[in-house]
Length: 327
Length: 292
Figure 1 (cartoon, each protein chain N blue to C red):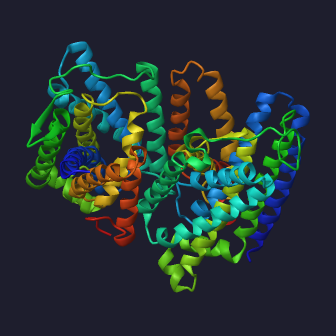
Figure 2: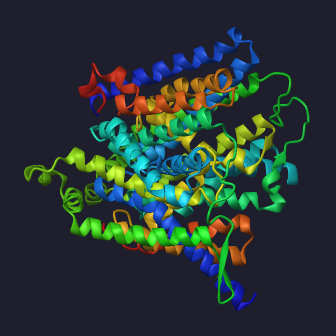
Figure 3: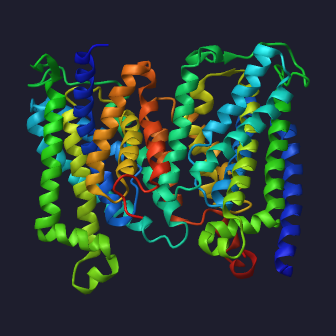
């Protein structure tokens, strides 16, 4: 192991610990519920994007269908809760496991596809899921499910008086997703994924089991995204197919990583920290007129960043020490 | 279910499929030319429908007559989009694929926002046109005239495109650039010019489709999104890079959609299209006519 790489990893861990500590203190200074809401969403999308990045960034299998796993997490949790009385905590884990199993089941045929054929297949499968849930009467069809109000309780993962518990859960999820990525980066899997991304044929010939390593990435990625979906469902207290499985979630998971720096450790967090507050603020300050100015600004920014910084915002930070440090 | 009903629905499916082919062919052309998937393709369609709508509202030009004007307007739009955005996206040295996806996608959002800003989110439609609402009946099968005209325009456009690519200098330059963009520079073909004209042509083709569709479909800022996914599936089904694969892909999509609507509730009719796409690429990972 390259010494500089090891040093960089220690430094990353330290920075993450400091940032997480600072974030944990943020609610002391932010009393405004609207701002707290934005912080929660930012942390959630950072976690989602970090998870998406494992499959699409590190392993190079661009998925624009992760809304499927997000929705599965949300629906598994709420169906188990409202129909069978299973606590959301168990539902959340069940959702994660179901999503991981589905991801591997889909991976079996999907990973034979290349490039755009793969991307379109992921969009299409999420659309199929959306349409099926919209027509599934038992699961509430297009009407969705309202989560019953049972009062503030960690046991039932529901908080009415304050949003802070949601904030801390989102922060924890974000930390877990980051830490998993950090840990995988230096594992056998991390090296396999980068090899698969750069040149699958060469990787195969060097003994990397390309297919299995894609499956592993898909499972980890789907599991974490489904946990995020379960959290989002509890946070909203209401779900319907469009609001947890719509195509926009697939994009909102991909965009922070792409803008921040795809396939990098810090890209998703950095991207989410800029993109999500910007989305929310443009929507509430200039989107209120319903005249689309927020869309114009938002879209133009995406174009500008993707053209000006093809390697994402993280490239601004690593330019000076680009050679050794970025591998 | 009578045989009559089945034939009726397959006939409507075929007409719609030819139109899907026309919507998708621009996407296939651009991809074949330079390996770029235009994620603003649905928005090109949306703009075309608005142009047709406004030509009707302000100048009382029937959608059928305005189709060439709409195509011309879209040609300019396509070329401008290439020159202002895509040209720069092509220069990205890292993450080229992602840059192309997200720059055109960002553009799509901007176009939707602009449409909302200038045209409001209201649903609009062309109240009466020469063909709108009329049907003709052949042996007891009823065919709506606008869709019939759309199918006819689609067949003519594909035939025209075939002649254009194979018989004109520009068509040959297009084909040559697509085969080897490096080598064409050596024989004096300006690659940028060919790409810009290719984008113009691709957009003009979706413009034709939009002009026809304006006479029988609601027009609103998000209308492109619902057709964009079908267009991607159509192109991928036909095989990326194959312009005439889009023709076959469109027909397959139209027929599958109509068949699905016969057996499943109407809200699930797209599931059939998606399932057939997955089935085809699992068996043939490069689509029906694509090259690997």
